[in-house]
Image (cartoon, rainbow, N blue to C red; front, side):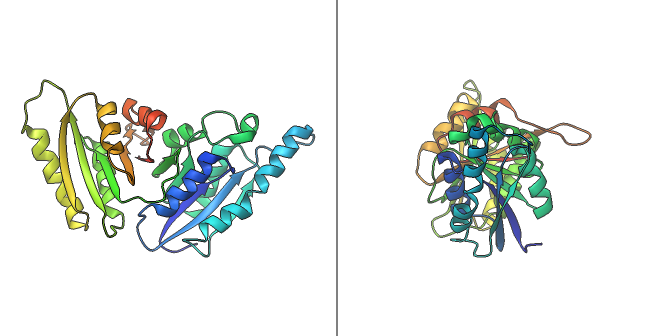
Length: 266
Protein backbone atom coordinates (compact mmCIF):
# COMPACT_ATOMS: atom_id res chain seq x y z
CA UNK A 1 0.00 0.00 0.00
CA UNK A 2 1.32 3.42 -0.98
CA UNK A 3 2.17 5.80 1.85
CA UNK A 4 0.57 9.13 2.57
CA UNK A 5 -2.51 10.61 0.95
CA UNK A 6 -3.59 8.50 -2.04
CA UNK A 7 -5.26 9.84 -5.19
CA UNK A 8 -6.83 7.73 -7.93
CA UNK A 9 -6.90 9.40 -11.36
CA UNK A 10 -9.27 8.08 -14.03
CA UNK A 11 -8.28 8.45 -17.67
CA UNK A 12 -9.55 7.56 -21.13
CA UNK A 13 -7.32 9.79 -23.24
CA UNK A 14 -10.01 12.40 -23.91
CA UNK A 15 -9.50 16.14 -23.48
CA UNK A 16 -11.49 16.24 -20.20
CA UNK A 17 -9.47 13.28 -18.88
CA UNK A 18 -6.24 15.12 -19.67
CA UNK A 19 -7.67 18.16 -17.89
CA UNK A 20 -8.33 15.99 -14.83
CA UNK A 21 -4.76 14.70 -14.93
CA UNK A 22 -3.37 18.22 -15.03
CA UNK A 23 -5.71 19.33 -12.25
CA UNK A 24 -4.64 16.36 -10.12
CA UNK A 25 -0.98 17.23 -10.71
CA UNK A 26 -1.54 20.87 -9.72
CA UNK A 27 -3.88 20.26 -6.81
CA UNK A 28 -2.53 20.95 -3.29
CA UNK A 29 -3.18 17.46 -1.90
CA UNK A 30 -2.13 16.69 1.66
CA UNK A 31 1.52 15.64 1.69
CA UNK A 32 3.10 13.16 1.44
CA UNK A 33 0.91 11.92 -1.41
CA UNK A 34 0.92 9.17 -4.00
CA UNK A 35 -1.21 8.43 -7.06
CA UNK A 36 -2.43 5.65 -9.28
CA UNK A 37 -4.19 5.81 -12.63
CA UNK A 38 -7.06 3.65 -13.84
CA UNK A 39 -8.39 3.09 -17.36
CA UNK A 40 -11.75 1.35 -17.69
CA UNK A 41 -11.95 -0.93 -20.73
CA UNK A 42 -15.62 -1.83 -20.35
CA UNK A 43 -17.11 -5.26 -19.64
CA UNK A 44 -15.54 -8.35 -21.18
CA UNK A 45 -17.28 -9.99 -24.12
CA UNK A 46 -16.54 -13.15 -26.06
CA UNK A 47 -17.45 -11.50 -29.35
CA UNK A 48 -16.73 -7.83 -29.79
CA UNK A 49 -17.60 -5.93 -32.96
CA UNK A 50 -14.54 -4.48 -34.64
CA UNK A 51 -15.36 -0.91 -33.61
CA UNK A 52 -15.71 -1.91 -29.96
CA UNK A 53 -12.47 -3.88 -30.01
CA UNK A 54 -10.71 -0.89 -31.57
CA UNK A 55 -12.10 1.38 -28.85
CA UNK A 56 -10.81 -0.97 -26.15
CA UNK A 57 -7.37 -1.05 -27.77
CA UNK A 58 -7.42 2.75 -27.89
CA UNK A 59 -8.28 2.91 -24.20
CA UNK A 60 -5.61 0.40 -23.26
CA UNK A 61 -3.06 2.49 -25.15
CA UNK A 62 -3.75 5.32 -22.68
CA UNK A 63 -2.10 3.51 -19.78
CA UNK A 64 1.46 4.48 -20.67
CA UNK A 65 0.78 8.19 -21.44
CA UNK A 66 -1.21 8.43 -18.22
CA UNK A 67 1.66 6.89 -16.28
CA UNK A 68 4.16 9.35 -17.81
CA UNK A 69 2.02 12.31 -16.85
CA UNK A 70 1.48 11.12 -13.28
CA UNK A 71 5.23 10.52 -12.93
CA UNK A 72 5.83 14.26 -13.21
CA UNK A 73 4.70 14.56 -9.61
CA UNK A 74 4.61 10.95 -8.42
CA UNK A 75 7.57 9.03 -9.93
CA UNK A 76 6.33 5.69 -8.57
CA UNK A 77 2.81 6.04 -9.98
CA UNK A 78 1.46 3.29 -12.16
CA UNK A 79 -1.72 2.67 -14.11
CA UNK A 80 -4.09 -0.28 -14.25
CA UNK A 81 -6.56 -1.19 -17.01
CA UNK A 82 -9.74 -2.97 -15.91
CA UNK A 83 -12.47 -4.77 -17.82
CA UNK A 84 -15.37 -3.18 -15.95
CA UNK A 85 -17.84 -0.43 -16.64
CA UNK A 86 -16.12 2.88 -15.88
CA UNK A 87 -17.69 3.84 -12.54
CA UNK A 88 -17.39 0.30 -11.20
CA UNK A 89 -13.75 0.09 -12.30
CA UNK A 90 -12.91 3.39 -10.64
CA UNK A 91 -14.62 2.48 -7.37
CA UNK A 92 -13.12 -1.01 -7.22
CA UNK A 93 -9.59 0.28 -7.88
CA UNK A 94 -10.12 3.07 -5.36
CA UNK A 95 -10.87 0.42 -2.74
CA UNK A 96 -7.84 -1.68 -3.68
CA UNK A 97 -5.54 1.33 -3.66
CA UNK A 98 -7.02 2.74 -0.48
CA UNK A 99 -7.64 6.00 -2.33
CA UNK A 100 -8.65 9.04 -0.31
CA UNK A 101 -9.69 11.08 -3.35
CA UNK A 102 -10.61 10.52 -7.01
CA UNK A 103 -9.85 12.82 -9.96
CA UNK A 104 -11.88 12.54 -13.15
CA UNK A 105 -12.73 14.58 -16.22
CA UNK A 106 -16.22 15.87 -16.88
CA UNK A 107 -17.93 13.89 -19.66
CA UNK A 108 -14.58 12.49 -20.66
CA UNK A 109 -15.85 10.07 -23.27
CA UNK A 110 -14.00 11.33 -26.33
CA UNK A 111 -14.13 8.99 -29.31
CA UNK A 112 -15.34 6.07 -27.18
CA UNK A 113 -18.62 7.61 -26.03
CA UNK A 114 -20.65 4.54 -27.01
CA UNK A 115 -18.40 2.23 -25.01
CA UNK A 116 -18.37 4.27 -21.83
CA UNK A 117 -21.81 5.84 -22.06
CA UNK A 118 -23.59 7.94 -19.45
CA UNK A 119 -22.23 10.59 -17.12
CA UNK A 120 -19.49 8.72 -15.29
CA UNK A 121 -18.35 11.86 -13.49
CA UNK A 122 -21.79 12.60 -12.11
CA UNK A 123 -22.20 9.00 -10.96
CA UNK A 124 -18.84 9.12 -9.18
CA UNK A 125 -19.68 12.38 -7.45
CA UNK A 126 -23.08 11.08 -6.37
CA UNK A 127 -21.90 7.69 -5.10
CA UNK A 128 -18.42 8.31 -3.76
CA UNK A 129 -17.66 8.33 -0.06
CA UNK A 130 -14.35 10.09 -0.68
CA UNK A 131 -13.77 13.52 -2.29
CA UNK A 132 -14.04 13.66 -6.09
CA UNK A 133 -12.17 16.28 -8.12
CA UNK A 134 -13.93 16.95 -11.43
CA UNK A 135 -12.32 19.02 -14.20
CA UNK A 136 -13.46 19.86 -17.71
CA UNK A 137 -10.56 22.20 -18.55
CA UNK A 138 -6.86 22.09 -17.78
CA UNK A 139 -5.75 23.78 -14.57
CA UNK A 140 -1.94 24.00 -14.62
CA UNK A 141 -1.92 26.12 -11.45
CA UNK A 142 -4.22 25.98 -8.45
CA UNK A 143 -3.51 28.66 -5.88
CA UNK A 144 -6.96 29.76 -4.76
CA UNK A 145 -9.59 27.52 -3.21
CA UNK A 146 -13.12 28.86 -3.10
CA UNK A 147 -15.24 27.09 -0.50
CA UNK A 148 -19.00 27.28 -0.55
CA UNK A 149 -19.90 27.63 3.10
CA UNK A 150 -23.42 27.89 4.47
CA UNK A 151 -22.85 26.31 7.86
CA UNK A 152 -24.44 23.00 6.87
CA UNK A 153 -22.92 19.63 7.75
CA UNK A 154 -21.75 19.17 4.16
CA UNK A 155 -20.13 22.59 4.11
CA UNK A 156 -18.34 21.85 7.38
CA UNK A 157 -16.96 18.59 5.94
CA UNK A 158 -15.74 20.49 2.88
CA UNK A 159 -14.10 23.07 5.15
CA UNK A 160 -12.33 20.42 7.22
CA UNK A 161 -10.99 18.72 4.10
CA UNK A 162 -9.82 22.04 2.66
CA UNK A 163 -7.92 22.70 5.88
CA UNK A 164 -5.97 19.47 5.28
CA UNK A 165 -4.68 20.66 1.91
CA UNK A 166 -1.07 21.75 1.51
CA UNK A 167 -0.73 25.54 1.25
CA UNK A 168 1.89 26.85 -1.15
CA UNK A 169 3.42 30.23 -1.78
CA UNK A 170 0.65 32.49 -2.98
CA UNK A 171 -2.11 30.13 -1.85
CA UNK A 172 -5.34 31.63 -0.56
CA UNK A 173 -8.68 30.32 0.64
CA UNK A 174 -11.95 32.19 0.17
CA UNK A 175 -15.09 31.24 2.09
CA UNK A 176 -18.18 32.32 0.20
CA UNK A 177 -21.46 32.36 2.07
CA UNK A 178 -24.43 33.15 -0.14
CA UNK A 179 -27.46 34.66 1.59
CA UNK A 180 -30.88 35.60 0.33
CA UNK A 181 -30.94 39.05 -1.34
CA UNK A 182 -33.30 40.37 1.35
CA UNK A 183 -30.98 39.42 4.20
CA UNK A 184 -29.35 42.24 6.14
CA UNK A 185 -25.54 42.64 6.12
CA UNK A 186 -23.43 41.59 9.10
CA UNK A 187 -25.75 38.71 9.89
CA UNK A 188 -25.08 35.56 11.89
CA UNK A 189 -24.00 33.98 8.61
CA UNK A 190 -21.09 36.40 8.38
CA UNK A 191 -20.01 35.76 11.96
CA UNK A 192 -20.26 32.01 11.44
CA UNK A 193 -18.16 32.22 8.27
CA UNK A 194 -15.42 34.24 9.99
CA UNK A 195 -15.33 31.69 12.80
CA UNK A 196 -14.98 28.89 10.23
CA UNK A 197 -12.14 30.71 8.47
CA UNK A 198 -10.07 30.40 11.64
CA UNK A 199 -9.68 26.68 10.93
CA UNK A 200 -8.08 27.49 7.57
CA UNK A 201 -5.81 30.13 9.06
CA UNK A 202 -4.56 27.69 11.67
CA UNK A 203 -3.78 25.22 8.88
CA UNK A 204 -1.61 27.80 7.11
CA UNK A 205 -4.16 29.02 4.57
CA UNK A 206 -4.57 32.81 4.40
CA UNK A 207 -8.35 33.07 4.35
CA UNK A 208 -10.91 35.71 3.53
CA UNK A 209 -14.68 35.65 3.93
CA UNK A 210 -17.22 36.90 1.44
CA UNK A 211 -20.90 37.09 2.28
CA UNK A 212 -22.78 37.68 -0.94
CA UNK A 213 -26.44 38.09 -1.75
CA UNK A 214 -27.83 36.21 -4.71
CA UNK A 215 -28.67 32.81 -6.11
CA UNK A 216 -26.27 30.27 -4.54
CA UNK A 217 -25.09 28.49 -7.69
CA UNK A 218 -24.55 31.55 -9.86
CA UNK A 219 -22.89 33.46 -7.02
CA UNK A 220 -20.45 30.65 -6.23
CA UNK A 221 -19.59 30.16 -9.90
CA UNK A 222 -18.91 33.88 -10.25
CA UNK A 223 -16.67 33.84 -7.15
CA UNK A 224 -14.69 30.86 -8.46
CA UNK A 225 -14.26 32.38 -11.92
CA UNK A 226 -12.98 35.75 -10.72
CA UNK A 227 -9.35 34.71 -10.76
CA UNK A 228 -7.32 32.11 -12.64
CA UNK A 229 -5.90 29.20 -10.70
CA UNK A 230 -9.05 28.57 -8.68
CA UNK A 231 -10.90 25.45 -7.62
CA UNK A 232 -14.42 25.34 -6.19
CA UNK A 233 -14.88 23.16 -3.09
CA UNK A 234 -18.41 22.06 -2.19
CA UNK A 235 -19.88 19.66 0.32
CA UNK A 236 -22.35 17.01 -0.75
CA UNK A 237 -25.32 16.10 1.39
CA UNK A 238 -25.43 12.80 3.24
CA UNK A 239 -28.55 10.98 4.34
CA UNK A 240 -28.85 9.34 7.72
CA UNK A 241 -28.12 5.68 8.34
CA UNK A 242 -25.45 4.51 5.91
CA UNK A 243 -24.47 8.09 5.02
CA UNK A 244 -25.45 7.78 1.38
CA UNK A 245 -24.17 10.75 -0.58
CA UNK A 246 -26.72 12.97 -2.32
CA UNK A 247 -25.76 15.73 -4.74
CA UNK A 248 -27.67 18.87 -3.95
CA UNK A 249 -28.77 21.28 -6.65
CA UNK A 250 -25.76 23.55 -6.14
CA UNK A 251 -23.20 20.72 -6.40
CA UNK A 252 -24.96 19.19 -9.40
CA UNK A 253 -25.22 22.57 -11.10
CA UNK A 254 -21.55 23.31 -10.44
CA UNK A 255 -20.56 20.08 -12.18
CA UNK A 256 -22.64 21.09 -15.20
CA UNK A 257 -21.49 24.68 -15.45
CA UNK A 258 -18.25 25.38 -13.61
CA UNK A 259 -15.32 26.54 -15.72
CA UNK A 260 -12.87 25.69 -12.94
CA UNK A 261 -12.29 22.29 -11.30
CA UNK A 262 -14.88 21.31 -8.70
CA UNK A 263 -14.07 19.24 -5.62
CA UNK A 264 -17.11 17.48 -4.15
CA UNK A 265 -16.58 16.42 -0.52
CA UNK A 266 -19.07 13.81 0.77
